[in-house]
Image (tube, one colour):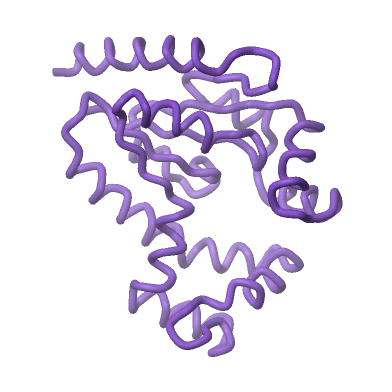
Length: 198
């Protein structure tokens, strides 16, 4: 089985593209959802987060998201520290999940595949690209935040141009080109590669 990553900058629409693959019967591991789950269920990780950010990081068993966000989106060093705690646990969880799949290939959806070093555990990476103005608009609408807030978040990811160059395939999600034919083409290509590997 091939392990395939799917990534893209914030607002690129990678989740929508991942859903199209899921509709084709491809299992999808969402690293963001998994990280949120692990931050509230993995005792070692919970302990590390409390040590780094203080007990206020949790309200009962729930992660105090607004408290954490208030710190990490203002302080790059703190964001780096959080990522250094969360990424290894999530990567390990993703690897365990991958081993349980039996389809020709499985997808790992993650914004920070290259930033976290997760590409080392993957055979191929699909990039989802969209023009900057469209990405900013989508995130402002989705998260109900200002343009400045969006740009601040984007600043924590490597540039889309570099990210797309590192990918094996790129799907353009610009509201002009249809996504489905692009996904089908990549899907067929990866299925053929998976056949070769057997």
